[in-house]
Length: 235
Image 1: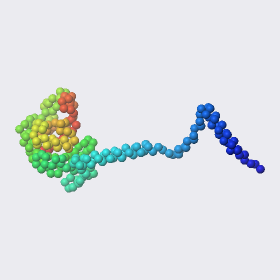
Image 2 (image 1 turned 45 degrees about the vertical axis):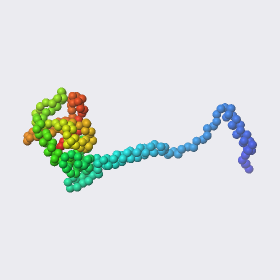
Image 3 (image 1 turned 90 degrees about the horizontal axis):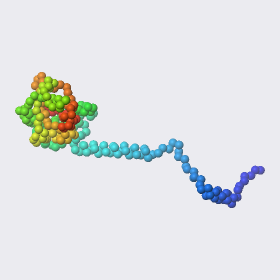
Image 4 (image 1 turned 135 degrees about the vertical axis):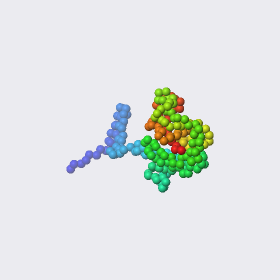
């Protein structure tokens, strides 16, 4: 019969001691075996950081939206017979300062015509009294409208524009300041970055051909910067 050979315990201990002694003399030790990671294991720290970033952005957007709602800058879409709402095509907003300006404007709401390029209609923007005030203020000062010379940046007569008009001094009185403040609130552009109100009048047959409000000359851009938005108020 075959029998398995079993080394005495003392012999095994002797071999281990000898191996340790040799390792010390040679100056190295056998590296312990490392447990192998599962083949399909993936690090989780990247996924956690991405999730934290997304949650942080959502939280920041929520805070901004709540702040805008609290300030009355925007509000949730509301539809009715006078202002039909199709998705985000229209939305309502409260006035920033109730009672500012002249007369009663009623409820104001914004109709979105386009996001790219941005085009909106601000319903109830001016009161009837404010319209009449601007007309009476500008009427004695009306003169033939001019255009900007793209080379010199100065005003000149042109057949492409046959209307009459005048500029009102920026911040000229309280009513004008209230209107300018309202424009800044609706457009999110500071009053200091705006121009004075320009009142225009068109007789039957008068016109202003298609054009850009954007300055093509260096004179006006150095004087007050480039135009980035235009707001038209029908009186």
